[in-house]
Amino acid sequence: MITYERHQLANGLTVVANRDRTSQLAAVNLLYKVGARNENPERTGFAHLFEHLMFRGTRRIPDFDRPVQMACGDNNAFTNNDYTDYYITLPAVNVETALWLESDRMTGLDISARKLALEKRVVVEEFRQRYLNQPYGDQTMLLRALAYREHPYRWATIGLAPEHIEEATLDDVRAFYRRWYRPSNAILSLSGDLPEERMFALAEKWFGGIENPADTPSAAPLPAEPEQREPRRMEVVRDVPATAISIAFHIGGRTSRSFFAGDLTSDLLAGGDSGRLYQTLVKERRLFASANAYVSGDVDPGLFVFTGHLLPTTAPEQAEAAIWDEIDRLKNDPVPARETEKVKNKFEANTLFGELNVMNKALNLGFYEMLGDLSLVDREVELYRSIGAEEIMEFARRVFRPENSSTLLYTAKR
Image (cartoon, rainbow, N blue to C red; front, side):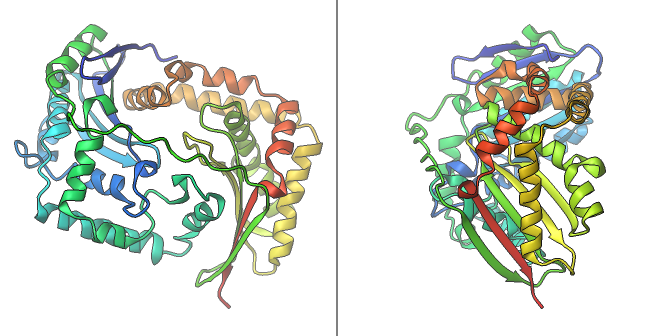
């Protein structure tokens, strides 16, 4: 269990604090509620581009990493479709260094034409190397575009096309910064051996004087994805070592019961060498070289995905039928209690182990506050424990329907 207290500054910044008396380290996590989902479809990839720009220095601090290193700290960041997250770990006695740095770059980022040009080149090169020129690099991008028609989850965090980044102007980028990088759109979460009152006082000291831009528009509601009513299919031919298949199904959002049932089901199917997909499709039937199942974990309704790489002797029709065989097994045969108990025990152990780390605590507190249900950080194990065989069968019958499926056949060039 993670103990915490929550406070909101007058400027709208949410602060969540956890006192960890067992560690000499402290973690400072700043989450901005902006991800790929908030981008203009004609200008995608901006959230990820901005993650890069935030390390390019401010007008007051030209080198962000140097003060962190001088304080014996470490820092990094990540972007996804729902939010952007920046985090610093350092000795608790140096926690103000992290707060000073983060408060400074919330408003003082030095976005020059030269710095923008440098980061645009870096991001475009990443796009090409990881997604366009890498074997299977565009697989998840194609699957997203197949499964979603309206919601901005239809594009990946990297964006729809390199041109969207290449054509970004200085005015475009500065406007993105003003709109999304502000106190009322951020969550500051801290973990370390400091009294919560002290953490709140430090947050007030370093962030309390920051004002929100007066002309900031409110976030527009995102288009809801219409219910899928027919199967979708796509086949592409690529220069890859083996043919791959993916089948995606729409499930509920991150706080829904559907997500938890789906996450548990994915662990049953793909929880290592003892998972059903490996045991049946790889080891026994020898149809796949590898097989996996996962949930996307998106805040809004996401996807449950089956995926695998075929052996050269396996026809695509055989592989697809084999996946549906496993689906039918879930629909019709109750999962033995020992099988679900193993998965639940593993989830609980991983959760408890993760709570030993101040960085994980700070990350989790920020994430669940962003979800709008902070107490969920301490209730997830209980939720997983409450899912039984009947609910797994009901989930499979409701979700794994042909009309709710999007199948991508990623065929190896002969």
